[in-house]
Image (cartoon, rainbow, N blue to C red; front, top):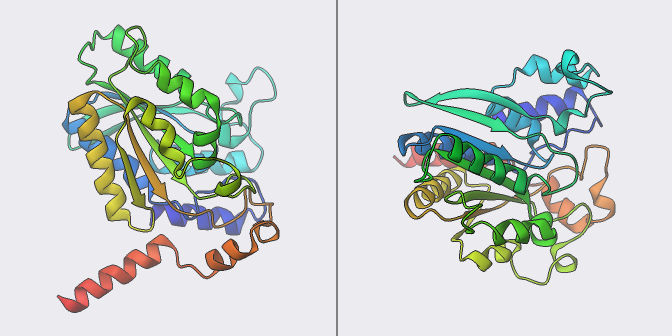
Amino acid sequence: MAAEGFEQFLHKKYVGTKRFGLDGGEALIPGIEQILKRGGQLGLKEVVIGMPHRGRLNVLNNVMDKPFRAIISEFLGNPANPEEAGGSGDVKYHMGVSADRVFDENEIHLSLAPNPSHLEIVDPVVIGRVRAKQDQIEDTDRNEVLGILLHGDAAFAGQGVVAETFDFSALRGYRTGGTIHIIVNNQIGFTTSPAYSRSSPYPTDVGKMVMAPILHVNGDDPEAVVHSARIAVEFKQAFKTDVIIDMFCYRRFGHNEGDEPSFTQPLMYKKIKNHPSTRELYAQQLILKSTNA
């Protein structure tokens, strides 16, 4: 509810302003929360997150606890930390932040790496930070520091740096004991449909090069997303390998909020326009359960 409310407020208050919203993929937020909650129970002390601009503002607010007033201030053109800006600063959906969160009395330090609009370039940066932190605290069991990488479906399949990052994931000097990858699979890359952007059936097929388990899950089923997140972190902690969650969802608006997607994908967006939100579907499910109880 918080994730959807966040996006709806910004959509109404700042019409047409670029925010690269998470509308249609809001189940990502409880999924990340479950990784942190269960991970803390399994010994995690620190998590480094890397992600593109899609959904970053939502993650900043609902996962990283960045104050809503700070995000709104950036919408008004004010830099978040003017004293730290040596130049003109950066756009709001590139910003990183650190925070401490507590889950079931387990404190976890979170770091969201800043990232430019060059998709996937942050992947090796996050892995390097995780390995450095593990070496610093002598976490040779690779249990206490975790990397979480968020991806779009088109970028995950198409960007060579993804395969390169997988390639050194098990090498002695670089391995971190596994990374959790979450694909926000909105089934489109900018204006390109999957049939024209990749040769494999799934965007996650590149992960097969390291035999990573792949969990395909419906983004309109938040309970299934949370369950898959729990499986992912438990598997990673037990077997020290990468795990991929492929969350099938959609992008309710255009590539950015100034885009009109019905020009390039009219049939797809005719369906999306009439499709209820994840919150509405889940509310209907709960009402049905209570009625039949």
